[in-house]
Length: 363
Image 1: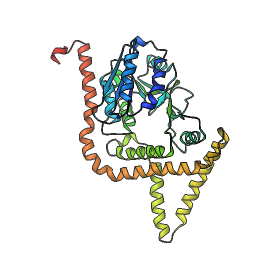
Image 2: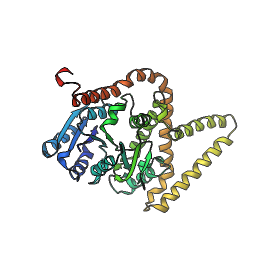
Image 3: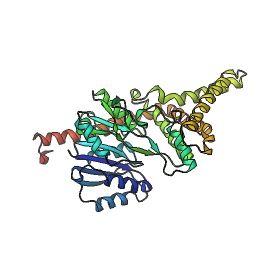
């Protein structure tokens, strides 16, 4: 079965070498593997490294290096799909690492009858320094990330709302189309929502593993959380069904802080005090759990502050998104079907050609 392993990258020169080594070490036959790289308007040596991989490895079915027309994750993923040839299409983030059986386990799961699958995607630090391990502890914690099963090791096969580094039968994109190019960080949530609405199940298989590198500094992590919160709020304007209440928890925290602070200024400080005490209780409880369950570093004492900064960054991003959303969605609703339909049209045309319904010279 031909597999298209797709990677998009924007200025990931530092991360790609390790990922390329992971890809080359896969135990799935190279003649049955197509590699699709998409350069998402990078300004560093990302495309050069991609082309270098293509020049070095000739035993694959093919190695495609494509350029995305705009800097957009969703548009880049659509570019990857449009350049793919595999019966199975696997999405792989550039800032990640995979074991040697990653492709083969995805294929095994799909061949068992699944249409969309993935596995646990715990996080890793680029270096095992005390500060990096502290940031990793914050990201790994339920208080710092989320309850999504794909962020951690899965124990048994189950059906979920979404997975990271997913593998899809080609038929799925032919049915639901591509990614919504109006969306930023939430493009996978929205796609998986449409996939579920179309009647497909998303399988989380414990034998499939991949790992995501955390951001290397606190400021970068805060920017990431701000962006996540911003796009969660904006997505409410075009596809509210793919957003859960959990996504909006940091926004609720920020709104309560604002309202209760105003009330405190007017002489009613009790709600603000209660909120801060409750938050501090959970903050310290989770921090204590980190000290108990992980290798200890002195820098862990900063976790209560780190948790607060990450939550506020996410919540403020969501608040900004809510303010922007009414204006943003006017254009978004007009443009959102374009990328989705472009992928669907291309794959439908391809199916017609394969079935002898449309000849290439008449298409």
